[in-house]
Image 1 (tube, rainbow, N blue to C red):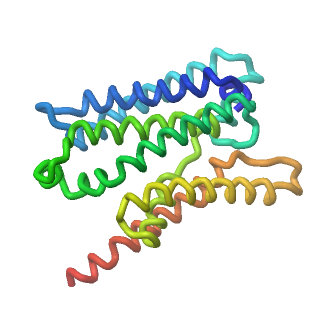
Image 2: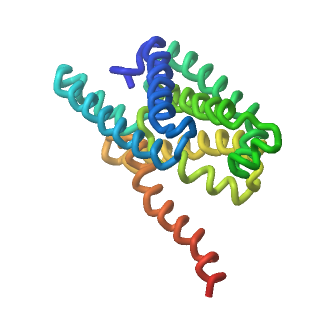
Length: 231
C-alpha cells in the first residue's frame, strides 16, 4: 500500500470514491422511484468493469516500480501503511461500522420485505440508503488500508450467522470482529507458509485460494436441506 495508501488523503479519497460509486449504483438501479436489486446488480457489474479499465490504464501510465506496488496492493496486503493512513482509516472504519450497528435493528425489519417494514413504521428508502452508504464508507476505508482482499465479507458473515443467529444487532458487530480476526489469521498463514522461500504472498491471494472453494461448499451445504425437504 505504499504507492496508494501512504497518505491520509488517499484513505479519505477511497471512502469518497466508494460512496460516490454507491450513489451511482443506487441512483441508476432505481426504476419508477424504487430500488430494483436486479437493476442495481447490473449497474454494479458495469461500473466495476469501468473501474477495472481505469485501474488498468493507471498501471500502464505509472512507472514500472510503482506499477509493481500497485499490483501488490490490488491483490491485498496488510502491514505496510503509514501511521497517518492507519489512524484515519481506522477512524473511518469505526465510524462506518458504528453507523451500521446503530442501524442494525432497522436491518432486521428490512429483511422482512419493503411492504412489511413500511407497515411497521420504517422509512424503507431512507434507511436502505443509509445502510448502503455506511457499508460503502467502511469498504472504501478498508480497501485503502489493505487493498482488494476478497471473500472475507462473503465467508465470515455466513459463518457468524450460524453461531449468533440472524439478529443484526449481534450479527453486524460480530462479523466485523471475526472478519478482522480472519484477515489477521490469513495474513499470518501466508507469511509463515512462504517464509522458507524468503517472500510473502499478498493476503488477498490466500483468502481467494481458501475462500473460493469454501464458499462454494457453503452454498452447496446451505441448499442441501432445502432439496432434501422437497423430496
